Amino acid sequence: MTVRLIEARNLKKYFPVKSGTYGTKLQFVHAVDDVNIVIHERETFALVGESGCGKTTLGRVFLRLEEKTSGTVLYRNTDIHSLNEKAMRDLRKKIQIIFQDPFASLNPRMRIRNILAEPLTTHKYGTAEETDSRILELLELVGLRAHVLQRYPHQFSGGQRQRIGIARALALNPEFVVCDEAVSALDVSIQAQILNLLRDLQEKFRLTYLFITHDLSVVRHIADRVCVMFLGKTVELGPTDEIFRYPRHPYTMFLLSAVPIPDPHKRGRERPVLKGDIPSPMSLPPGCRFHTRCPYTKPVCREEDPLFVESGDRAVACHFPLDQN
Image (tube, rainbow, N blue to C red; front, side, top):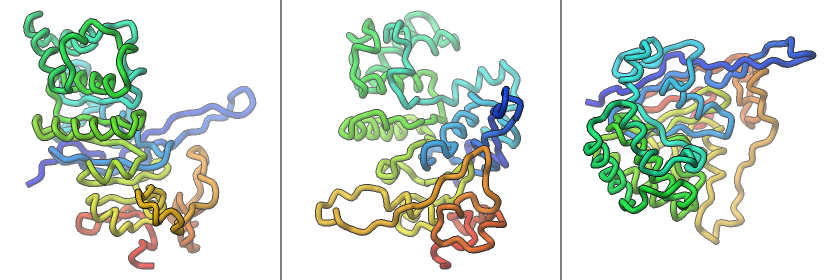
């Protein structure tokens, strides 16, 4: 039986933006808009979509790095946004994040030893000897050696810096880790190494990942389930293999068609291309948010927002799913 680790219920996150003459008009960016998802223990749950669709914001709201506008985030049936400062501080040990840019996320003025020691000392891990022992253990876990401890982040390659970021995220033995575009800033060969490392660490420590990315070729090799987002809404969810074989939402189909195929004989293949402009997240169109770009749009799509309907282990928000066209 799968155990629900973290879930979102009717979760919304809006950002206020002032516009107009002298900033007198107040509008809202609908970054996350009525999202309902469940992530189970020990699974890798991938969140995919174009830049600006709300993936990173959703991940940050899950960790309470951003406060919600409305809705609920439950971690083992506890509403994390209702916790007081002390309870939230204790929960931080269980929920961590690996950031996109391994250089920007590491303090350039701190040596690697201090970077890895910071979460341990902040949460009173143990004595100085126990902290030093844990730091060496973390380095070994991510494939680095003890002689790097006195170096600064700029003295490492991108892949090495990301290994340090992973080590820092694992310092307090978390259960849930948000990987926010964790390999997108790396070369392809280094991406493979980091993905293999993340898989090994997941198996060893029984970790649960929320893997945020726009790269579907990466998703196919690491994720158990995939959730597709468009303009703050979840539009499709299901097991990875089924999503890739039989996408039900037109947006998912277009995303998959853009994935490069490593076969020179298929270079000239015809691929569907999205047309039209992406609506502004501050001025959303009525009805389905994808209807301005969807080739299958019908009158109801322009008038009614489709529900996110579950069917077995699949869910889709579309009036006319692809297998019903």
